Image 1 (tube, rainbow, N blue to C red):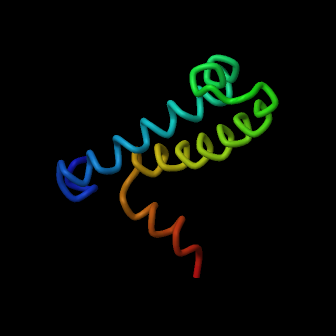
Image 2: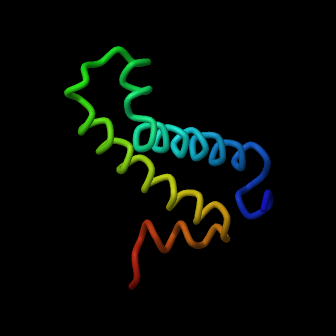
Length: 82
């Protein structure tokens, strides 16, 4: 897995933001009230916090899938079929 991503530095450069994004998406979706209280924003922002959680969570699920598979998957996702 290290070799497919280009070494340990590139591996960590992909892994750390992916894990952070998955945590942020989880927190926004499933712990909305605690996140709103922690960040000090109004209760009326719950819909937008959940929306941000869906967007970030979905993006990082794709990253986790690509990260878990070979590196050529990223080229297919970014460039699309010919």
